[in-house]
Amino acid sequence: MKIIYADYIYTPSGYIRKQAVAFSDTIKEIGPFEILESKYPDAQMIQTVPHSVLYPGFINTHVHLEFSANKTSLKYGSFMPWLDSVIVHRDDLVGCCTNAMMMEECRSMLRSGVTTFGAVSSFGNELEVCEKAPQRVVFFNELIGSVAQYADMLYGDFVERVRASLSCDKEARITPAVAIHAPYSVHPLLLHKAVGIAKQHKLVLSAHFLESQAEREWLEHGEGEFRAFFKKYFNTQTPVSNIQEFIHAFDTYPAHFVHCTHASKEELNYLASKGHSIAHCPRSNRYLGVGRLAIETLKLPFSVATDGLSSNDSLSIFDEMRAALFLHNELPIQELAIALLKSVTSDAADILKLNNGRIAVGKMADFSVVTLPESPRREEEIALWTLLHTKEVSSVFVAGQKVY
Image (cartoon, rainbow, N blue to C red; front, side, top):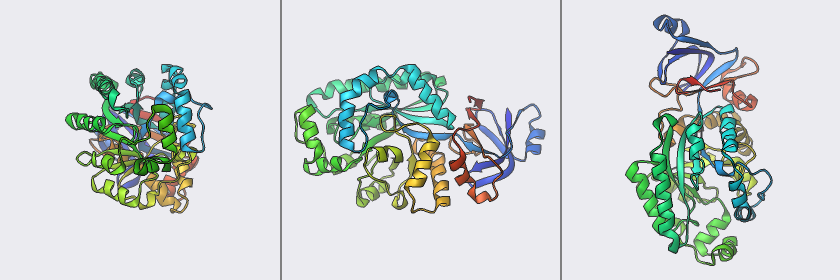
């Protein structure tokens, strides 16, 4: 048993002062330090430094570790030139992305307080790293393939990767999951099979969706920049799916849709009606020139996520939240700061179906300690000061154990 004390604790009902948390691998009790100390006299006492705020561990729902080697190889500014550069440099980038490199990115997320992340894996190369990472990992086995003649081979490989993640040692804290790459890149036959696998095993399901205007033009009319792309690389000029067919494939099972920057109001409302959610990646959207997701009008829950280093410069969740803070400049800054912190704690935990993301009795003891430069003059601004002043957290606990 341990007891941790901080000036402020971020709870589902807001920030509370001068309280402590008693925990082992889960949270046992929250209350005044003196009372918990008396009740648990043999507990290890953890006193944070002045001006500290105890948060639940932050959750990054959407990360691609396999492109961690990218620094200047890929072309930013517009989606299709970026995608073309991914095809050209993919083998080199994936080939030189070592386990040590991916583990360092896991540690970089840890330094920003991330205790859980969703790793989207196209090839399964990251599984060994994720098994050894100090965090919890929701391991998204990604399915990609639009050519019907290769469908059986691609599906067989996908099933083997799902089985490998299902058989991970429980001590590794791996939660298997399923990801669909995108409506333009997955054949409907494969799509329905993959959704079936997720439903069968009750796995979290994710999919990239309408990230660019080029994707919308291709799916709706078979025109635009994707037409030349598919002719060049796949010798076809006909999309394998359309927007409505793709959306309806998820009607009976909730999914975490990624980006959605070019989804219409009607499409977003339909996703909301079916219990879906969105991963919002503001820096990736800016770097690829795909526009802004209007979070202020969303009727479905969203998380803020970093995406991978194929379309970002860091995997810091605080870098991402600060970007969102400035991107959505028409929203009241205090309210937005609160919403962003909620999006990487309780909302993200609900999306990934995990028993963390909240400091509440019975939740997993995953914590991040943020230390402000001075005591906040106004408690209603703690969320904003947290986002503005935090580059790295002071300490991190996963399952009750200090890991940073």
